[in-house]
Image (cartoon, rainbow, N blue to C red):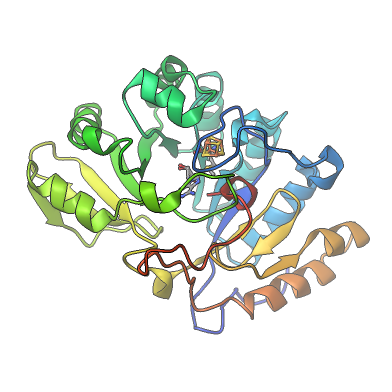
Length: 337
Ligand code: SAM
Ligand code: SF4
């Protein structure tokens, strides 16, 4: 056991949530996330599953209680279940409170039972539309039926499924009420996310697609009775209850509402860079101390602490002047959404 106190940043926020991108690869090419001809990292750049295990275990010893596995598409990483199985020991010991993942749903039918067996209780599945043709347009390579089957399999395996929907004006704004009704029927929470200016997508216009969740909420209220709740799930979403369905809707609003003051998380890329803020470029390399000292975590712990000591107060995304400012150059699939 490391004889060290928990991770606390300069703004007195306790860091107890780590999001880990286990691969930059994906079987989809969502228009807001990747260009169609993405170049992926050479395999040797990626942390091995053993290195990911060591790194995550050090974070758990430093007080991380929630681990979210993401990507790219986490379930396309070869042997990823070995990693989930390894992390489940921290759930069993009580050191970790929650092990979860964010997925596009394409592979989840294959892995749902094993994930449940590893102690995963909730999964976030990204789904922006219920229209198969539109689904193809947004994901470019995705198969709608496969994702639907995956969501069903996950629920059957006892996993609570939350649907994440990126709000895209001119794309899924006509489906707002259908999504709420569908999630309500199936008992899935639904979270809307504002499209963020991440990565260069070669001509995609974020301002055209940007749909403020303030406007989205106003549209929702034309049909549904929404009541604000104080419920939080450890993330940045603010929730409302829908009286007609009994379901819950979350809003992640990095652009219209700044949620940074309660930020408890950091993000690890698949190459071992630690980003202290999704919306800032500053990062710390953890791969070097990890590889230079294969049997001693001292340098790694020092690097993590130094990184947390410079966690910024917040991000600078801003669309308000009709241009995208605060844009960060890396893709969401690199840092892990
Ligand atoms: N492949 C998995 C998936 O799609 O759920 C996990 C990684 S993906 C990068 C995580 C989340 O980021 C998804 O919900 C996706 O919709 C969201 N995302 C990707 N690019 C985004 C952007 N530019 N703005 C807002 N959300 C974005
Ligand atoms: Fe892949 Fe997820 Fe990005 Fe879509 S949002 S391209 S599924 S990583």
